Image (cartoon, rainbow, N blue to C red; front, side):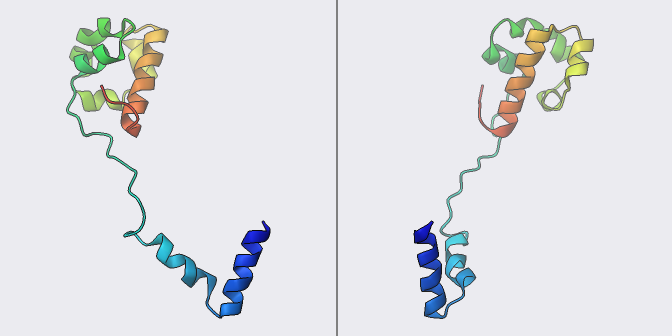
Length: 108
C-alpha cells in the first residue's frame, strides 16, 4: 500500500496527470487478447453428446429429431429437455457442457 501511495506522490510531483500516465497501458496495441470466439467448431448434436459421454449419447436421436440443429441445442432450456423425457442427471450434464462450450472453455 505504501508503494502505491509513493507512486501517486511521484506522479503528482512530476506535474503529470495520473490518468495520462495510465492511458498508454490501456491501449489496444499493448493489451493481450485472451478471448476466443466460442462457436469456432461446426459440431452436430450426436458428436457433441458423444464427447460429453456418461450415457448422454443415448438421447442423440431424440434430440436430433426434436431440436434439429446444434445452434438450437445451445439455447435449449432444462424444461424443454425434461419434456423430451431426458433424465435429470443427463440434463445437467448436457446443460453444463453447453454452457462450457458457449463460454469457450470446452471443445468436443
